[in-house]
Image (tube, rainbow, N blue to C red; front, side, top):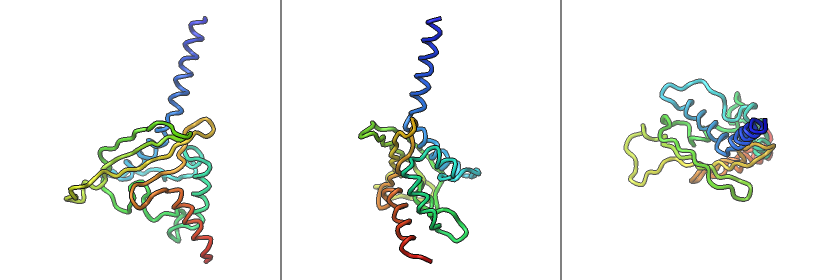
Length: 175
């Protein structure tokens, strides 16, 4: 009986460790991007659907997103963005060579690095071409890993800062 109880406890501990994997919410977002930009795109769920906001994003990210969503990019839309924030554009090739690597936890935050090639179909590239790179800042809230920010390399920077900027600009320009 003790042996069975110990095995059950060990299984529960392993399940809990797997559930706290910081790359899990990142993998969900990246699989959505892969589906959406496939050669034959599949119908998917918005990166920031209500279901996802309540499940895989931090409370602070949700606050920033909801504040910015009050100022949609298009009259008939509900998104504050006029581009795909994951591929950093309005046009993309299918996603190839996707790599998701969770770094060590630092200051209660895990940096999950994502690289992929989404420009392979645009023709010849510069000699110094590098794959697209994102850094998902993942924290633990409510006992589970959640995305607190997405940092895009280059000029785009922090997605949460962009959301705060959209909300601030929208609030200062009443319509």
